[in-house]
Length: 579
Picture 1 (cartoon, rainbow, N blue to C red):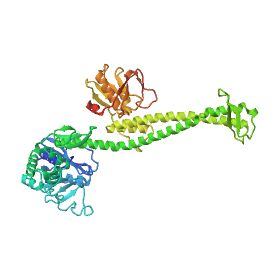
Picture 2 (tube, rainbow, N blue to C red):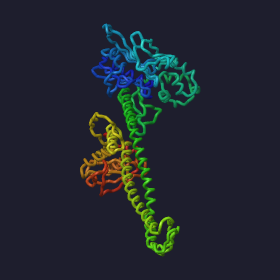
Picture 3 (tube, rainbow, N blue to C red):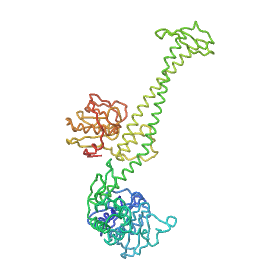
């Protein structure tokens, strides 16, 4: 329920408490449908985020700033004109639904005290941010809605503001027990759906949670239940709900944020990250989701380019294998040429075949050699020698081309595995730079010299014994990590496959720490989904980098091998200090 009426109610109560009487210092518009208000309130500088994004509509306080355009959009300039210097008088949710009203007291151009209201309608693709005058007329909006878009409700400057169409539902903050009972008596079917149809702002998840908190499963037929008892339990839950805590972010199996809730959900079985308030939870959820989405968008072009080059290398290797198979007849051509050369005195021009003893075989059995009737026996012998020379040259060239293609494929598969582990923009930039340097991507044509960024950092884990374990996320990190480690520290890598370099920062490694480091080496390798991965272990001083090899390429000796079953759950249980 990223932003249903229940979540908005929790956020609105927190914002009203923290922002009331605060002064608006700045207004920013980093996105077309997102407004940031910088407000000084109760001795703090607070950032209020209002977003009308169809996929991420929300309202909350935030710790994360976004870069704004050099030239502010017109809506931003208008908000600055009307709101800067004004005081926040109230923040409240309207009718229990997904509409937030923020009332400001400001000075007009004539010095009179006037009221301005900012309405945030957080309704999916119909979301909007609307500025109203004191008499309820629309001054402007983030999105204009004319008759071509909606004949029911227009949102245009100068028009009186009309609230979104009512849904014939009860306000959960104001509904009485009698009203709830009367409204529920009109419903049929599942209890959770009846709750959602009765109360404004209750998403399906909020309705299921209400049923669970009332002591039901949610799937019961409401007709079979005691209606007054259900209404009484629901009324009691609505009165208790604002005091429930703490705010949580539900995590997926991979550890990514999956949903955000104002309190732990009884009807769900999942892991949670706990936060101190609704804004903190919403901020963490949307920031991390936005970071992951942007990273996926930016990495999709790299992933597509890598897959294209990998498929090209695989086709090239297959072609060279065919060429090598054809070159396997090289010895046959040489032998036929020598047999013809040794029997020239017996052969005549115009014969389609030459019957000669094959002295290359143990029993010197006769062999028939096809002849070109237009050529003399000597010319036929030379023809076979030329076929031999051509096949030998093709074999040498094909073998060399295959070797190069296999090296390129290994490099690309390493980059592809690094892309899977990439978790930040810096690492993504490093991978792109590597592909540009190797000629697999074209560098952007620009005269502006790119800003030099600090190198990305490898992952850092703390073992159960308290020992630091670092894991490289790409080839450049692998090289910096390995070459910068002490000679007596332990180095690990999945055997004969792309993967991370792992360094255990200890000269004496406890058995449990070694097992955890080997697990990380197996999990952060191409064999992450295999049943068993061989992991080589040696000291850093036995790891060498041959000259002229790509980043991250090393050779090593004195290794021992551990066989590890990658386990994502076990990796997640390890203490990750730096992701």
